[in-house]
Image (cartoon, rainbow, N blue to C red):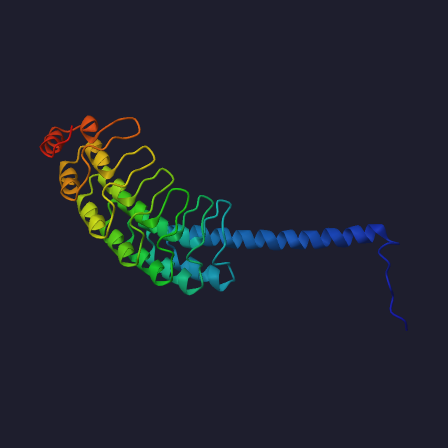
Length: 255
């Protein structure tokens, strides 16, 4: 008995039905993939280790990225869910994936001061000097005043004089917020005391404008130029907002 051969071209309705069925199957598979991936992101964000483990066991993609480019690892890093981060890394999470805004899990963990998570990420090869549009892990850790994280990043070779799109360095950021311990740490690691941002401001200008006398004193002792002028002709003295800062600058010979 000869096999029955069906010519789809002779039966257009059948051909359409087959194509529709194939399309439905593909869309269903895509939806299932997205749903499991989003569920994994949600569980990681909440720090629900049991659910994360269950979803991974069912085949959820450990590197699934949301529409904004966030992965389960990034979401776990936000809140410092160490157990979940460790689990995701063990299952092969890519430590250097970037979100739509250029953030990595390391930048996110550094920004939020989660030292234990930072340590795990660095041990798995996170790029310590990766720079997004205006961020490095070191800059974000300095912004938050996270001493232990900054220390860890520097020990791993973070570039201390790296500048963001506006010319800011970690030292300028630390000086802006008056983080004296960080300023000392960064200078000890070779931070350039007179490095300028795109407007000609230095760390001394940032500390003077922010009213941080202790930081101003440290910067002056390290050779900060107290008579430098910005592109607009401003000086640290003209920007000083604190009486003690004014006295320190004048005593150093600022005009």
